[in-house]
Amino acid sequence: MRVVIVTESFPPDVNGVAHCALQTARHLVDRGHVPLVVAPATSPKFSTELDQGGAPIGTGPDALAPCPVVRVPSLPLPGYPQVRVALPSRRVAAAITEHRADIVHLASPFILGVRGMAAAARLGIPAVAVYQTDLAGYARTYMGAGEAAAWRRIRSVHAAADRTLAPSSAALHDLEAHGVPRVQLWPRGVDTVRFRPDLRDEAIRRELAPNGELIVGYVGRLAPEKHVELLAGACGLDGVRVVVVGDGPSETTLRAALPGAVFLGRRTGDELARIFASLDVFVHTGPFETFCQTVQEAMASGVPVVAPAAGGPLDLVAHGRTGLLVPPGDAAAFRDAVWSLAADPVLRAAYGAAARTLVEGRTWAAVGDQLIGHYADVLAARKTVVAA
Image 1 (cartoon, one colour):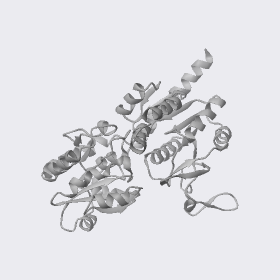
Image 2: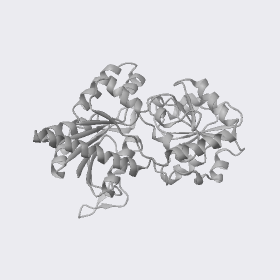
Image 3: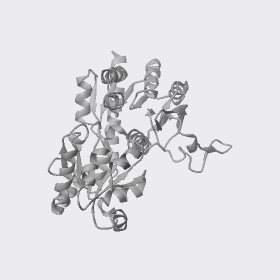
Image 4: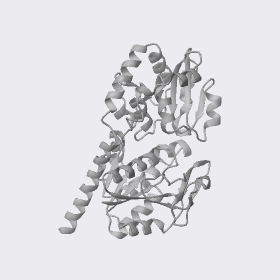
């Protein structure tokens, strides 16, 4: 199959949409398919120098990509420069045409993905839309309103797709409840080789908690919708050290809101995997997660999880077996859950071991094959319609 992946974000961006698009492209190549990625242009600091033959020199943004990447002009989002928004461009339709795509994969379509959807429709090419971002939740967080408008946008974009793939049962139910047709479940994979319990590093632990404190970690973007300030109660617990990994527009306010917390900034790759495995408890605070990849990475690392009983974590965390689910937005509940695990090392160990066992079959290869199955179903359905 020749697949064009139109994505709102791609590495070197660090977020769930970018990571999933990268893993999808890798898996398609591994299975003998021919993907092409279309993504917003990166910040100038990530520009890639090319040799006379057009090949990348050094380690530019796409030098290590598993397939060709077409970059569309973009601008940083005002107030959140880590996020770039694609500008109108004919490159999307041209890329789909020149690649001779059999199917178009739209990763979290909103701006660039809308153009990809329109181009696919004009060209008569089937499209699969992957729902990954709770735009309605973001509208509530950033504007205090606009949720209904966000759902109208989501519905109009996804209704044009041959199939929409939801990452969790909660996301699937939300989409169906708001009138999005042809929705099916497609979860996310996790790298169980990179993220594993035996990477626990005592040197890292001594650096983060020199007095032997219990290490409670958060990994993710530091933005208002993540509500990382809910960890303030955990910061006040005796013998607990809160560690925050990530960056974003809320970092300055969070440093003031979380006294005593250690802020490590953005960490990736093997270094991030060692940090995950060196935690005693992982806490995710955001209530608007359609999936929540960091919860899976913590579980693969053998770490018990505390997360809100909302969205993606409902599918991931087995309450009372691999971690604890608490009411969204309840700072006292987060604090009490952390304290209950801090007081019981035997329970922490049992939860962590069960978490690792639960995710061992959720590899990117396994979910990637599921995705290819969805592609095949859509292509077969299109052929049936044409034949009729």
